[in-house]
Amino acid sequence: MSAQDSGTAERRRQFAEEARSERPDLALLCLLLGAEAGPVGPEEPRPVDPAEVSPDPYGMDAAQIELDRLAGLLPYGSRSPAAWASALAELLGERYEFSGSSADYQRLESSLLQQVLRRRRGLPILLSVVWIEVARRAGAPVYGVALPGHFVVGLGDPAEPVLVDPFAGGAPLTGQDADLLVAGATGARLEPSMLTPARPLEIVLRILNNIRAWAAARPERTDVALWAVDLSLLLPSHPARLRYERAQLLVQRGEFQRGAAEMEEYAGVLDGIEPTTAETIRHKAQAARALLN
Image (cartoon, rainbow, N blue to C red; front, side):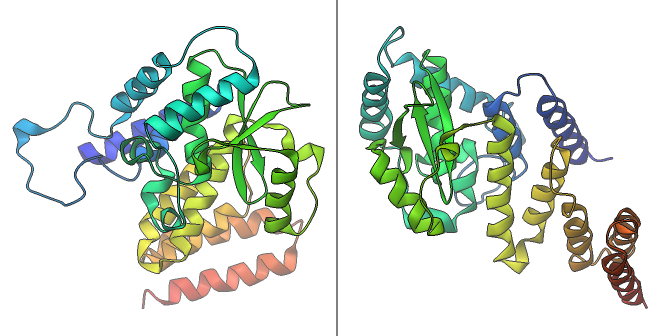
Protein backbone atom coordinates (compact mmCIF):
# COMPACT_ATOMS: atom_id res chain seq x y z
CA MET A 1 0.00 0.00 0.00
CA SER A 2 1.39 3.41 -0.97
CA ALA A 3 1.74 6.22 1.56
CA GLN A 4 -1.12 8.03 -0.17
CA ASP A 5 -3.40 4.97 0.02
CA SER A 6 -2.42 4.47 3.65
CA GLY A 7 -3.30 8.09 4.44
CA THR A 8 -6.67 7.74 2.72
CA ALA A 9 -7.44 4.54 4.62
CA GLU A 10 -6.56 6.18 7.94
CA ARG A 11 -8.72 9.25 7.23
CA ARG A 12 -11.65 7.05 6.27
CA ARG A 13 -11.22 4.96 9.41
CA GLN A 14 -11.32 8.17 11.42
CA PHE A 15 -14.36 9.40 9.46
CA ALA A 16 -16.27 6.16 10.11
CA GLU A 17 -15.29 6.16 13.79
CA GLU A 18 -16.38 9.77 14.28
CA ALA A 19 -19.65 9.21 12.41
CA ARG A 20 -20.49 6.38 14.82
CA SER A 21 -19.52 8.26 17.96
CA GLU A 22 -22.11 9.35 20.50
CA ARG A 23 -21.73 13.02 19.56
CA PRO A 24 -20.27 13.32 16.06
CA ASP A 25 -18.03 16.36 15.55
CA LEU A 26 -19.45 18.25 12.56
CA ALA A 27 -16.29 20.24 11.84
CA LEU A 28 -14.04 17.19 11.97
CA LEU A 29 -16.31 15.19 9.67
CA CYS A 30 -16.44 18.06 7.17
CA LEU A 31 -12.66 18.46 7.27
CA LEU A 32 -12.08 14.73 6.75
CA LEU A 33 -14.50 14.95 3.84
CA GLY A 34 -12.60 17.92 2.43
CA ALA A 35 -9.31 16.03 2.69
CA GLU A 36 -10.63 13.52 0.12
CA ALA A 37 -10.33 16.21 -2.54
CA GLY A 38 -6.58 16.48 -2.03
CA PRO A 39 -4.10 18.90 -0.47
CA VAL A 40 -5.02 22.51 0.15
CA GLY A 41 -2.68 24.81 -1.72
CA PRO A 42 -2.28 27.37 -4.50
CA GLU A 43 -4.88 27.51 -7.25
CA GLU A 44 -2.21 26.82 -9.90
CA PRO A 45 -0.13 23.62 -9.64
CA ARG A 46 3.63 24.08 -9.27
CA PRO A 47 6.65 21.86 -8.55
CA VAL A 48 6.87 21.03 -4.84
CA ASP A 49 10.17 21.14 -3.00
CA PRO A 50 10.26 18.26 -0.45
CA ALA A 51 11.50 20.77 2.11
CA GLU A 52 8.24 22.71 1.66
CA VAL A 53 5.93 19.77 2.38
CA SER A 54 3.44 20.90 4.99
CA PRO A 55 2.83 18.87 8.16
CA ASP A 56 -0.83 19.78 7.55
CA PRO A 57 -1.21 19.17 3.79
CA TYR A 58 -5.00 18.91 3.86
CA GLY A 59 -5.47 22.09 5.88
CA MET A 60 -7.33 20.34 8.69
CA ASP A 61 -5.34 21.77 11.59
CA ALA A 62 -5.27 25.22 10.02
CA ALA A 63 -9.05 25.13 9.56
CA GLN A 64 -9.67 24.21 13.19
CA ILE A 65 -7.35 27.02 14.29
CA GLU A 66 -9.21 29.48 12.05
CA LEU A 67 -12.59 28.45 13.47
CA ASP A 68 -11.21 28.93 16.99
CA ARG A 69 -9.73 32.31 16.04
CA LEU A 70 -13.01 33.56 14.57
CA ALA A 71 -14.92 32.36 17.62
CA GLY A 72 -12.50 34.27 19.83
CA LEU A 73 -13.54 37.48 18.10
CA LEU A 74 -17.13 37.05 19.27
CA PRO A 75 -18.21 38.12 22.76
CA TYR A 76 -18.62 35.04 24.97
CA GLY A 77 -21.55 34.72 27.32
CA SER A 78 -25.29 35.10 27.60
CA ARG A 79 -26.88 37.03 24.76
CA SER A 80 -30.27 36.98 23.12
CA PRO A 81 -30.58 34.94 19.90
CA ALA A 82 -31.12 38.16 17.93
CA ALA A 83 -27.96 39.67 19.43
CA TRP A 84 -25.98 36.54 18.53
CA ALA A 85 -27.34 36.72 14.97
CA SER A 86 -26.31 40.36 14.69
CA ALA A 87 -22.82 39.72 16.09
CA LEU A 88 -22.26 36.78 13.73
CA ALA A 89 -23.44 38.74 10.70
CA GLU A 90 -21.19 41.66 11.62
CA LEU A 91 -18.13 39.43 12.10
CA LEU A 92 -18.52 36.78 9.41
CA GLY A 93 -20.73 38.51 6.87
CA GLU A 94 -19.42 42.07 7.01
CA ARG A 95 -15.90 42.01 8.45
CA TYR A 96 -14.71 38.75 6.84
CA GLU A 97 -17.16 38.76 3.90
CA PHE A 98 -18.26 35.14 4.03
CA SER A 99 -21.07 34.76 1.48
CA GLY A 100 -22.02 32.97 -1.71
CA SER A 101 -23.21 33.55 -5.26
CA SER A 102 -24.61 31.49 -8.12
CA ALA A 103 -21.07 30.91 -9.45
CA ASP A 104 -20.16 29.02 -6.27
CA TYR A 105 -22.52 26.20 -7.26
CA GLN A 106 -20.14 25.37 -10.13
CA ARG A 107 -17.09 24.83 -7.91
CA LEU A 108 -16.22 21.71 -5.95
CA GLU A 109 -14.32 23.92 -3.48
CA SER A 110 -17.67 25.37 -2.40
CA SER A 111 -18.45 22.06 -0.68
CA LEU A 112 -15.10 21.67 1.12
CA LEU A 113 -14.80 23.32 4.53
CA GLN A 114 -11.05 23.95 4.27
CA GLN A 115 -11.53 25.78 0.98
CA VAL A 116 -14.59 27.71 2.16
CA LEU A 117 -12.61 29.03 5.11
CA ARG A 118 -9.75 29.98 2.77
CA ARG A 119 -11.88 31.54 0.01
CA ARG A 120 -14.73 32.80 2.22
CA ARG A 121 -17.12 31.59 -0.45
CA GLY A 122 -19.24 28.47 -0.57
CA LEU A 123 -22.61 26.79 -0.81
CA PRO A 124 -25.30 27.67 1.73
CA ILE A 125 -24.74 24.50 3.75
CA LEU A 126 -20.94 24.95 4.02
CA LEU A 127 -21.26 28.61 4.95
CA SER A 128 -23.81 27.48 7.54
CA VAL A 129 -21.26 25.01 8.92
CA VAL A 130 -18.83 27.92 9.38
CA TRP A 131 -21.53 29.93 11.19
CA ILE A 132 -22.49 26.95 13.35
CA GLU A 133 -18.95 26.04 14.34
CA VAL A 134 -17.85 29.59 15.08
CA ALA A 135 -21.01 30.35 17.07
CA ARG A 136 -20.90 27.03 18.96
CA ARG A 137 -17.33 27.69 20.06
CA ALA A 138 -18.41 31.09 21.40
CA GLY A 139 -21.28 29.58 23.39
CA ALA A 140 -24.23 30.51 21.17
CA PRO A 141 -27.41 28.37 21.03
CA VAL A 142 -26.94 27.56 17.33
CA TYR A 143 -28.02 24.80 14.92
CA GLY A 144 -28.49 24.14 11.24
CA VAL A 145 -31.89 24.28 9.56
CA ALA A 146 -32.21 22.12 6.45
CA LEU A 147 -34.87 23.98 4.51
CA PRO A 148 -35.65 22.30 1.17
CA GLY A 149 -33.26 23.71 -1.42
CA HIS A 150 -31.52 26.17 0.93
CA PHE A 151 -29.68 25.49 4.19
CA VAL A 152 -29.78 28.22 6.86
CA VAL A 153 -28.86 28.71 10.51
CA GLY A 154 -31.12 28.98 13.55
CA LEU A 155 -30.41 30.53 16.93
CA GLY A 156 -32.36 30.19 20.17
CA ASP A 157 -35.47 28.10 20.75
CA PRO A 158 -36.19 25.88 17.70
CA ALA A 159 -39.90 26.45 18.34
CA GLU A 160 -39.37 30.19 17.74
CA PRO A 161 -35.98 30.43 16.03
CA VAL A 162 -34.08 33.45 14.89
CA LEU A 163 -33.10 32.46 11.36
CA VAL A 164 -30.17 33.83 9.34
CA ASP A 165 -28.93 33.12 5.83
CA PRO A 166 -25.12 32.79 5.74
CA PHE A 167 -25.21 32.58 1.93
CA ALA A 168 -26.48 36.18 2.00
CA GLY A 169 -23.85 37.27 4.51
CA GLY A 170 -25.98 36.42 7.54
CA ALA A 171 -29.07 38.36 6.51
CA PRO A 172 -31.99 37.76 8.91
CA LEU A 173 -34.87 35.61 7.67
CA THR A 174 -38.43 36.24 8.76
CA GLY A 175 -40.98 33.45 8.74
CA GLN A 176 -42.32 34.89 5.48
CA ASP A 177 -38.81 34.86 3.97
CA ALA A 178 -38.38 31.19 4.90
CA ASP A 179 -41.82 30.40 3.48
CA LEU A 180 -40.82 32.00 0.17
CA LEU A 181 -37.56 30.02 0.07
CA VAL A 182 -39.43 26.75 0.57
CA ALA A 183 -42.12 27.69 -1.95
CA GLY A 184 -39.45 28.55 -4.52
CA ALA A 185 -37.73 25.19 -4.03
CA THR A 186 -40.72 22.88 -3.70
CA GLY A 187 -43.89 24.82 -4.50
CA ALA A 188 -45.16 23.90 -1.03
CA ARG A 189 -45.63 25.89 2.16
CA LEU A 190 -43.18 25.97 5.06
CA GLU A 191 -44.02 23.28 7.62
CA PRO A 192 -42.95 23.53 11.29
CA SER A 193 -41.10 20.20 10.94
CA MET A 194 -38.77 21.87 8.41
CA LEU A 195 -37.37 24.03 11.22
CA THR A 196 -36.19 21.03 13.26
CA PRO A 197 -32.44 21.35 14.02
CA ALA A 198 -30.42 19.27 11.57
CA ARG A 199 -28.19 16.61 13.14
CA PRO A 200 -24.49 16.52 12.20
CA LEU A 201 -24.76 13.31 10.16
CA GLU A 202 -27.75 14.70 8.26
CA ILE A 203 -25.67 17.75 7.37
CA VAL A 204 -22.72 15.63 6.25
CA LEU A 205 -24.91 13.39 4.07
CA ARG A 206 -26.49 16.45 2.46
CA ILE A 207 -23.01 17.83 1.70
CA LEU A 208 -22.02 14.51 0.14
CA ASN A 209 -25.24 14.48 -1.90
CA ASN A 210 -24.33 17.94 -3.23
CA ILE A 211 -20.87 16.68 -4.21
CA ARG A 212 -22.36 13.63 -5.95
CA ALA A 213 -24.70 15.94 -7.88
CA TRP A 214 -21.76 18.17 -8.86
CA ALA A 215 -19.79 15.16 -10.11
CA ALA A 216 -22.79 13.64 -11.91
CA ALA A 217 -22.88 16.71 -14.16
CA ARG A 218 -19.20 16.16 -15.00
CA PRO A 219 -18.65 12.63 -16.39
CA GLU A 220 -14.88 13.17 -16.30
CA ARG A 221 -14.98 13.49 -12.49
CA THR A 222 -15.93 9.93 -11.56
CA ASP A 223 -13.04 10.11 -9.07
CA VAL A 224 -14.96 12.70 -7.04
CA ALA A 225 -18.24 10.82 -7.39
CA LEU A 226 -16.57 7.64 -6.12
CA TRP A 227 -15.08 9.10 -2.96
CA ALA A 228 -18.35 10.91 -2.20
CA VAL A 229 -20.21 7.59 -2.44
CA ASP A 230 -17.54 5.80 -0.39
CA LEU A 231 -17.86 8.32 2.45
CA SER A 232 -21.66 8.20 2.28
CA LEU A 233 -21.49 4.43 2.72
CA LEU A 234 -19.43 4.91 5.90
CA LEU A 235 -22.29 6.80 7.57
CA PRO A 236 -24.45 4.70 9.91
CA SER A 237 -27.58 5.58 7.92
CA HIS A 238 -27.47 5.90 4.12
CA PRO A 239 -29.57 4.95 1.08
CA ALA A 240 -28.95 1.28 0.20
CA ARG A 241 -28.98 2.16 -3.49
CA LEU A 242 -25.61 3.86 -3.05
CA ARG A 243 -24.05 0.40 -3.29
CA TYR A 244 -25.41 0.08 -6.83
CA GLU A 245 -24.26 3.61 -7.65
CA ARG A 246 -20.75 2.67 -6.53
CA ALA A 247 -20.76 -0.42 -8.75
CA GLN A 248 -21.83 1.69 -11.73
CA LEU A 249 -19.02 4.17 -11.07
CA LEU A 250 -16.46 1.37 -11.00
CA VAL A 251 -17.67 0.19 -14.41
CA GLN A 252 -17.50 3.76 -15.76
CA ARG A 253 -13.90 3.95 -14.55
CA GLY A 254 -13.01 0.74 -16.39
CA GLU A 255 -12.94 -1.49 -13.30
CA PHE A 256 -15.36 -3.93 -14.94
CA GLN A 257 -14.67 -6.97 -12.76
CA ARG A 258 -15.03 -5.12 -9.45
CA GLY A 259 -18.08 -3.24 -10.67
CA ALA A 260 -19.78 -6.42 -11.86
CA ALA A 261 -19.04 -8.19 -8.57
CA GLU A 262 -20.56 -5.33 -6.56
CA MET A 263 -23.63 -5.29 -8.82
CA GLU A 264 -24.15 -8.98 -8.13
CA GLU A 265 -23.78 -8.43 -4.39
CA TYR A 266 -26.41 -5.70 -4.51
CA ALA A 267 -28.70 -7.90 -6.61
CA GLY A 268 -28.44 -10.54 -3.88
CA VAL A 269 -29.70 -7.99 -1.34
CA LEU A 270 -32.68 -7.18 -3.60
CA ASP A 271 -33.67 -10.80 -4.33
CA GLY A 272 -36.25 -11.03 -1.58
CA ILE A 273 -37.54 -7.47 -2.04
CA GLU A 274 -37.47 -6.59 -5.74
CA PRO A 275 -36.63 -9.77 -7.69
CA THR A 276 -37.29 -8.16 -11.09
CA THR A 277 -34.88 -5.31 -10.34
CA ALA A 278 -32.34 -7.81 -9.02
CA GLU A 279 -32.47 -9.75 -12.29
CA THR A 280 -32.02 -6.54 -14.32
CA ILE A 281 -28.92 -5.66 -12.28
CA ARG A 282 -27.48 -9.14 -12.82
CA HIS A 283 -27.84 -8.63 -16.59
CA LYS A 284 -25.95 -5.34 -16.24
CA ALA A 285 -23.23 -7.17 -14.32
CA GLN A 286 -22.92 -9.67 -17.17
CA ALA A 287 -22.71 -6.81 -19.67
CA ALA A 288 -19.94 -5.20 -17.58
CA ARG A 289 -17.93 -8.43 -17.57
CA ALA A 290 -18.38 -8.69 -21.35
CA LEU A 291 -16.46 -5.44 -21.68
CA LEU A 292 -13.36 -7.30 -20.47
CA ASN A 293 -13.22 -9.26 -23.73
